[in-house]
Image (cartoon, rainbow, N blue to C red; front, side, top):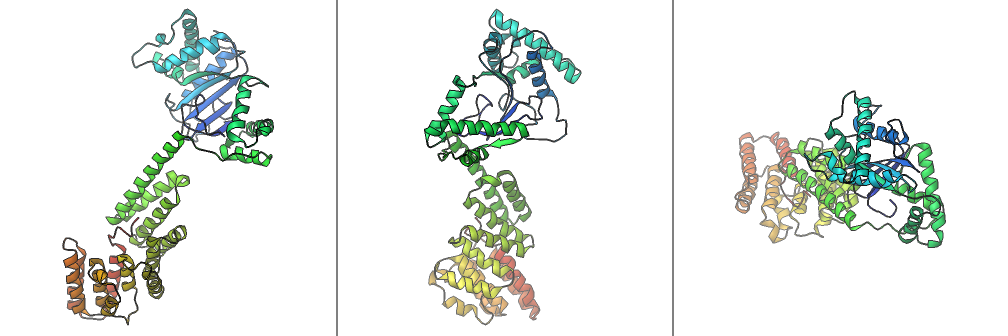
Length: 472
């Protein structure tokens, strides 16, 4: 676990991420979990003899493994590993030493390896190829069927037993003082985990102490906690270096996260704000601890638009400002800061912010649009246009903003002119049509009260802008 090694042979694969000692599982000595949500249920025996007697020490191990497969949690609580066990994701492991009988450490071990490779329809008897193996397989099957009947009240089929044996494994480890397993563990510590190999013995003692505490407390131990325990004991550690496989796994997860955020962004563009919110919540729930800073920034930004679209502008503004804290020098973040103040009614601050950052990003369409819409009432659209670079004056989105600015000032002729320019720039888009509809409404109403509705339209139009630059 400290060296970032694979879970095998203690689980089917993945980087070891946690240990649990003296668990409440049927196979209860140790639970090993990996980063890929794969688990190994371990029963440890210093030495064990094979026996055909159901009530033997070997029989008790089979009993525990049968119950691990068929029993439901006694407390009714579902945990990540309380699921239907499969050979691809789970192991039922008997860990013992070379002191155990040949029938356990050689014959049964080989039988269980072959049982995993049997194809559908192949008889279980094919897992044994010698007389000694056939004897071991027969006795193990009888014992397993007996305990299956006790646990379920029903007779086990051959397929039930084959499924059980395909989950089981034997691992031989000699971990007593000075034996091969211990020497290999200490060597791995010295070469991959700690800085000073002179501290190998102290580091090994520290690990054993941490594991004893885990077992006594029936608690969990992960890599970070174990590293912290070593540091507290004065052991200097190397920085953990992820394996190539772990790097590939992280890349796959990161791509999955990006895809989900892209879906949320697309939902915002389609004005499906509820769907966007649901997708973003799913990302946070399933991958919260795996998000990088850019992904957090994108989530907060899209949350901001979704909240505004759902009629919660104050919450949306807060999300934009939280995103700004993550990327304070990002053009998109600064633009959304202006929007945060604008949608909450603080136009003076929004205009001041936009005016400040406009000099740094003179060609930004979004910042220019925000600057226009948050401008003081005494500023006319024509005056604002004169302060813009010539390239922005021809931009359709900028013309949309100038048209709404003119509408707010009851200058319907100017609004019509800007709408025509927007239509020329965006002949296939619907926003110029919305502007013309608002102009027609204003010409019909010709009353001051219409301005309130128009101002609401401005904000709605701004927040629903399909400017890809804004939505991350």
